[in-house]
Length: 299
Image 1 (cartoon, helix red, strand yellow):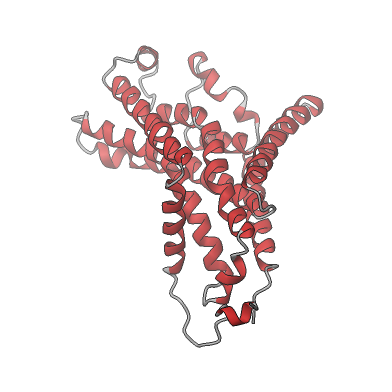
Image 2 (cartoon, helix red, strand yellow):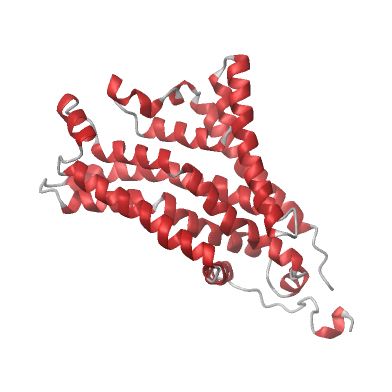
């Protein structure tokens, strides 16, 4: 049967969907992803585990029971415990964020290519922008659970176990600064995952391509940094860009006990880190948009 006789004609009416259609697409993708055992495992075990460990660690730190932070607070009275904890969490969740983006983000476009579903989607009153934003919101939601939820939990715990008046407003700027690196990570890894997903019809190939791209960026950053002796080349790797932005927004006091947190990250120029993150986002979304725009829609 021909496609135009199967009721797949392009919409020619005047009715246009509301902007809420992107949220409907995102909700459908989230529910479909949660049906996969590996995704459920990552959400329930990895995400909840990271949040639980962060919450317990910060509670012990706030109560003065965590040895490292207690020693630091004794030597550095002006150390912001929330900023210190968030810097630790950002360092420990970088590879988990890559894994989450690979498992959740890379199948979103590849499966539609494999099912030849894109012409059907765009034959209805759904724009390319609606489709792209809906898919991006889906992967963004999963990454936000890993990158944005722990700082919020630690902020709530700090408020719950403190009697200091006005602490909520006092720590609100720290919370806002703590969320920025996570937001950058969501945009970078989400855009890269969708961009690589649009290049192939097989989800396994898309995941390997995404992992290979991230690892190649890391290796090239190390090679160029050591060969040219310029720390700016570290901005090639996405996670270095995220850590440099975190170091700028949540600076640590210059003491030997905190030297391993920065570990040369501050040698990367902030402009290079911002440029690197922006280029990765533009490359991922640009690839996705170009591939989507090439879909032939039945008219």
